[in-house]
Amino acid sequence: MERLEKLLDKEQFEKIRAIDNPELHEFLADWIEWLEPDKVFVCTDSPEDEAYVRWKALYYGEEKLLETPNHTVHYDSYYDQARDKANTKLLVPGGKEIPFLNTKDRDEGLREIRELMRGIMKGKELFVCFFVLGPRNSVFTIPAVQLTDSAYVAHSEFILYRKGYEEFKRLGRGARFFRFVHSAGELDERKTSKNLDKRRIYIDLVGETVYSVNTQYGGNTIGLKKLAFRLTIQRAVREGWLSEHMFLMRVNGPNGRKTYFTGAYPSMCGKTSTAMISWENIVGDDLTFIMPFNGVARGANVEKGVFGIIQGVNPEDDPIIWQVLHSPVEIIFSNVLVKDGKPYWNEMGMEIPEEGENHSGKWWKGKKDKEGNEIPPSHKNARFTVSLEHFPNVDMDALEAPCGVEIGGMIFGGRDKDTWPPVREAFDWKHGVVTMGASLESETTAATLGKEGVRAFNPMAILDFMSVPLGEYIENYLRFGEKLRKAPKIFAVNYFLRDENGNWLNHKLDKAVWLKWMELRVHGDVDAIETPIGYIPKYEDLARLFREVLNKGYSRKDYEKQFTVRVPELLAKIERIERIYREQVREVPEELFEVLEEEKKRLLEARTKYGDYISPFVLERK
Ligand SMILES: Nc1nc2c(ncn2[C@@H]2O[C@H](COP(=O)(O)OP(=O)(O)OP(=O)(O)O)[C@@H](O)[C@H]2O)c(=O)[nH]1
Ligand SMILES: O=C([O-])CC(=O)C(=O)O
Ligand SMILES: [Mn+2]
Image 1: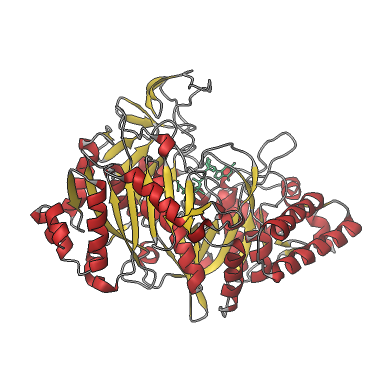
Image 2: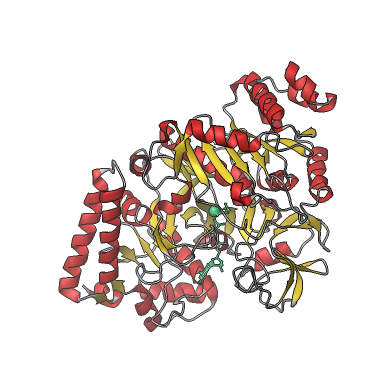
């Protein structure tokens, strides 16, 4: 406290003194001394402190006002537009190599990051913020403290997370809290991070602390989002619950029935656009905690806001997001095109100006970057940041429920052009965990730096964030199901099937029909067709739902094309997955191989009887 008293002015010091936690005090004193900010501001839960951060984001030029009240725009450096996987490392003692995880020796990593951060906040203001993951005052709650010299990062966190200063006061010495230390580093004239060659995101799993430096992009910097996620996965596996890259939503069944679903799809693969379907209700769009209570799986949103992809948001497909983005509620637009104070983005379904300002600076149509690529109006990974409370379709009770909501179904999906059908149901928990979750593959997207469109192994859509050996993670999943009296049904979806010419086989809104079908299946209200890879919908049920939900026809031909069981592709996939688990992952539960083997056998038998490509109508008659 003596050190802190010297480092802080009286008002800020009093705010810290009100929290009785010596561990926190020491952490703050150490880092404030080390970072050497000119000024420190401590945020309590008061609206004034939040407003101060908002104002500072404008004052320091990290955000600019747009025409609509409460709207601002923020830019990240042209080369800092997505998550940097290569420079995101897990610090583990001895630098133990773990397959599929990017690890580094803990001592070495801590030394490197401390060196990079020494005195890095000279001339800058440091914001000390307190938040919680999960609903406040609940079994899910995890407190966290964020240190950052970016008012944009702090501002984003006020929109995305529940405030935690009072929670820290309440918990006092009992708080088991996460720590995040971030610096955007030196900024250029556009107020974007300059030293990208020294961009580092280091996750200290032992100290439950994450360091992030020389970057501003949200996925690299917002402590409570993907940085905390690595820490919560570790806690969940140790304690026997699930921390997942999943949306959480309510699907409305017949006669007012409410059924909650989670969905795990990799980044940029449809979580937000699914959870936002206007006649259903959103609880969360990215991160979900799931705990077993009395034999029932219950889920809660880790966050309270959306850091969503803006490309493709248009009034027809996403009427609610569109409406919110055009209302005067607090929103940060990032990496979009701005002209005369108005934001524009790719594929917004209307004409876009031919010049303005965007993530590349002054922009005009046809402008090329240093590599000779034409720069689109907005970046593919441009995003909007907004609180869920502003969405007319939010399920507020579920969002704040201290014990979460009962989960009826869990969905897995990814970008797969030729293998999985649009929707199917697992035979049971184990079958779903292994053949749908643990077998997930998806094409890479612009949410991470690097090449797009490459099919990649991505179990549970979580591989980028994995922080424990994969075998342990899957083992925890399998055991989780055994703790439940009534396990959620597991489903797999594929929104991204293409025909021979590369055209999509489904419209963006077809997913609304798959959801209604899954809701009925959770309650046993419709029959299904048994196939070697699980249950698929009957044509008549889908045709009725297409009419009811979308007021659209659905032809037998389309159904047959979409739901044909593609045996060669499915077998090739099992081969790939089995090889990965046998040759690359260590200590895989034996059940995984058994379940894959059984699936392979069913496919081979079916092929003998019906051939390579099996029509759902054939399977229905059998
Ligand atoms: N073809 C096709 N594209 C879709 C569909 N649903 C979503 N997309 C596209 O997927 C992209 C983004 O999906 P989101 O829902 O924002 O992604 P997310 O899973 O929430 O991703 P993160 O926020 O990165 O974790 C957008 O470019 C959408 O246009 C679909 O049904 N069909
Ligand atoms: O974390 C981010 O940068 C945004 C996101 O949801 C993801 O990439 O999955
Ligand atoms: Mn995500």
